[in-house]
Image (cartoon, rainbow, N blue to C red; front, side, top):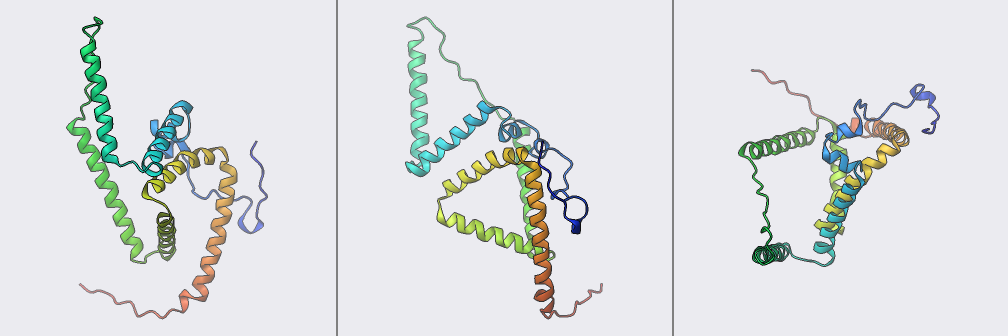
Length: 219
């Protein structure tokens, strides 16, 4: 049973959910196989993905392996295995190995390209609207997030940064699903504190900045 948090009399009988969402975490993550991996529905598959990502991070960041020699050596090893198996098959009277042919259709590739283009266009449009200063709160939040990401990225390699993001993606959703009431409560309270702090800054500092008259455009 989730714990009961005391209500704040200044904000109604209960604390509102911070995201106002009506979908489950599984549906918000896409509801497919990727969501099952992120939420550890299949523990063996999720553990395998985590082990593979850890191995890649270890090779590129700890051992400092270069990707070109690694790909070449993997290709050489695969070709040697296929060569030995193909030539040894007649000696043992067995069928030679058959590699399944993987073909990406033109329609699938085009859909992937259009999806990436659509998402990039939305991100660029959103960043442009925020940069124009239409919402000062979002502008300050994005600038602070980019500064934090810059500090974190300057203290570690790009591979470690990707691995850290992958670990967050593989752990935070399942932890949130498990401790959802507590996290919603803390985020709601934190959002209220940030809103009060922003209102103080807006009243004491931002409103005192002189602004020129708004010019009306005539057609």
